Length: 387
Image (cartoon, rainbow, N blue to C red; front, side):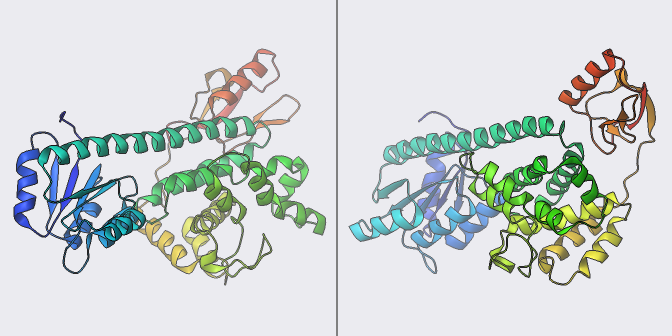
C-alpha cells in the first residue's frame, strides 16, 4: 500500500481489533480509532475530515448501519465502509442503501484486503473532493466575472452584493448556514434580476420613494427573473430556490405568493433576507445596532432564531465600528483594484459612471482607463484604500 496523507477512522467496540489496525497501518497513513458509535461521531465532528471511515456492524446502543447513516449526514464526502462478521444478504443490502457503503468487508479479513479497500476508498475520496472543489471554484469564478460585467449596467447592486457576501463569510463559521458556498453564490446572484428594471425605477426604489402599483409589481418579480436566469445553469437548484425566496417574509407574506412560510422557506433565503435588509438600512446611514433593533420590531418578517443568532454574532464579533482608513483623493489613472469609492466617478457632463460605495474591479478599472484616455472623466475621485 502506498503511503498516503489522508486520515482514516476505524470504529469498533473491540479494543484489540482497533489496536491491530492502528499498529499495522500507522506507518502508511494517519489512523484514528473510536471505541463505539458515539465516540466515532465525536471524532467525525472534532477530528475530521476523514477520507475513509470503517465501522463494525455489531456495536452497543447504535449499530454500524445507524452510525454510518449519521456519518453520511455529517461528512458526506467521507467514504464509508462496513466491517462485520455478520455477512447475511439482508444486512449487506440495508448497509448499502441506508449508509451508502462503498465496501462491505466480512470478518475475518486479512490486512491486505483491508489495505486494498482503503486505497480504493481514498482514491474515491480524492475524486469526490476534487470534483466538489472544481465545481465550487469554477462556479464562484464564473459568477465573479458575470457580476463584474453586470456592474457596468447596475453598479449599486454590486456594492450590495459584495457587502452581503462579506457578512456571509463572517457569520458562516459561527452560524449553521448549510453549504456556505451555495449561500455565497445566492447572495451574488440575488440582484441579477435588476438588470431588467429601468434605471429610473432602480434609482427611485433604492431612494425609498413611493412606487406606483405597476412599479411595485416590477420590483416584486426581480427574484423570479433571477430564478429563471439561474435555472439554465446545471446543478444550481438549491441556489436558484434561495434566490427565488430571498424576499419572502417568515410569516409567508410577500413574493412569491404561495403557501410556503416559516421553516418551509429555504434557510439560505431566511438568512439572506436578514443580511440584505441590514445592508439596506446601513446604506441609509443607520448604525447596525439600530438597524437590528428596527428589524426586531418588524413582526413576522424574519426567522426569530436566525435574527437573534445574527445579532448575537455581530455583538460578540466587535465588527460594529471598524477603524476606517481616512479617505484620499486620487487621479483616475492612479486607481487600483480594491479601492473603495467614497465619491462617484463622473463624466464632465455630470453623468455617474461608477457610483460611490463600489469597489474597483479589474473590468471597471479597464473601462475607466479607456474613458480617461478619451478625456471624458473628471480628473480626481475620493477613495478609501486598504480597508
